[in-house]
Length: 112
Length: 116
Image (tube, rainbow over all chains, first blue to last red; front, side):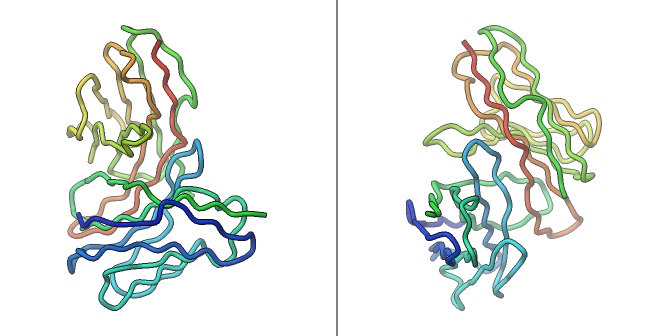
């Protein structure tokens, strides 16, 4: 699985968009980008994934650069409940079960 | 909504005790996982199962065993609890399709186990 690099921490004002970057310069053609988050004392929560195209769901948008070497997770209107550690993971999906490998992630703090 | 539940949020056990952690998912997922999470070490896979009665070792299976008798239930067993097994234990499940799949894992709330 490709290595990812994320900032250690970020702040965002409540109601504003939170843009969380992730670098994955060694990503290979068949690797997907996944985002999870973990709110303090809870289990991780899946947010979104993508391969090449930008993706959007009810939680967030994922923007992947054309060369796929980096991506940005966008929470369009951050709330206090979005305060969490956000993990960017790059991996090949496979037919057999494989574990997720979480790096250190980005601690997002949404400020009132 | 996918729901993964774990039997306890907090558990305190004594050294040498046999400990059972239960996980149940309600989405008919084939895959189930047990992880432990420790500060500075991230998420580490203990065991996973891709079908009933099937199991495979993860990165740190020593001191643990698992049981999957029913599709929805995956149990983690600490045969003889030790203090270095004090940790947050997370169960997860995922859907599995034939061929190449893109799946997400759904996690339970976690069990914080303290072994004294």
